[in-house]
Image (cartoon, rainbow, N blue to C red; front, side, top):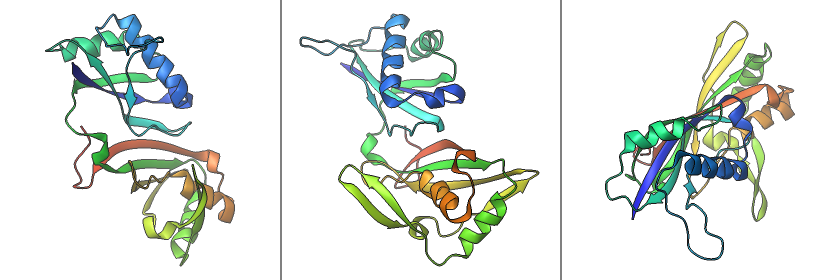
Length: 215
């Protein structure tokens, strides 16, 4: 049995596909592709799939991945990529298929690009940078807990071009602490009335503790 890792972009309207629906989309695509994927055994056989660091609804990503299995000893990864892209819906593009190189447990952080098309963004970010403290509430499966956002985002280095304000965030991700950029955008909305829905969020990298790109 060989585990195959499929890397794909999830952009545009595909950003609004939930994880549950993404599982259905990917399952249908694998079936339609005719690729020799492995099905689980039992009364309800289904394609084995494991997604890495699922993304929040409404966010785009250049670094999504899903693992599946095949009984092929030497898969033709280029043929897999071509076959999948022929059946993918709009907004999902497979850019790499290959063997598993790293375990998902090695992921330690994620990098995001955040963009506002709002003239009020620079003032709000400047005000955030001037704050000594920025406590936020993070919801978990066990309830809620308070985090000090300044511990993870001391300041935001942003660029302004016309009416566009953009910046990059690197936040903890993976099996341990997993922080979402919406903690910052929500804080800016609550404290400085910068509309959170005006923030376009794009995940650009998944990184190991050593700073290597997840493969």
